Image (cartoon, rainbow, N blue to C red; front, side, top):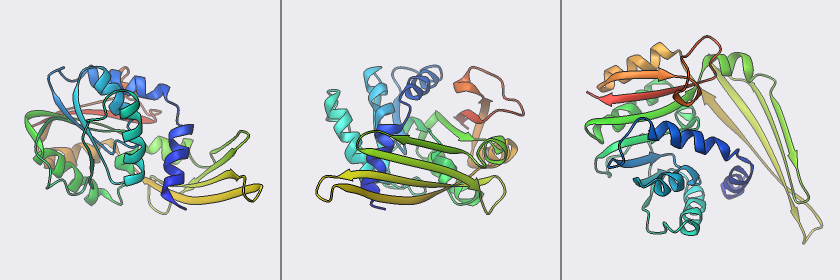
Length: 245
């Protein structure tokens, strides 16, 4: 599938109300004067909210297509001068240091294994100022093992259709999302079809805490519901707030 198509569908179909909850989580954990790097910023909707809230924030993502849409949203909101960087979260060597680094919406769960998670956490630690804050979320094993398997979602309007089916993955606490998009093409008076599979993997909370400690983080706080609840056995997403050691 042409990734541009996925980026466009993702931007159109994502529940934008969630971004309001993410910005609340950010605001509850940092200061207004903090300089922020939003890793895996995607189409930039959270980044726009950060700018509107008065934060000095920039974005980075591996996908040029996501960044192109992010640039459109920033321009529409009057923040067209916001830097957007094409960066791999496994290698941030070209970047400077920040007071805060954020990474939300399952992005870390797209890494291949716990060694890559360790590498990413190491990179984040090296690019935070002293006492800097790392905020991120991940889906939980309860989500991958209980909630996701067999999950189906379908959407359609006059010009588009979208089918999403999730299966248990190859590794423990992993899933595969089969995504199929249909977009109406007036030239052929029919639909173009685009398909791709997304792989996600997560780990017990103790493993995340161990690799964070190894990377040099301290005061690691784990919560549920965007920081509003304590975690339990049925939590579907963990929210981490960590301080650089």
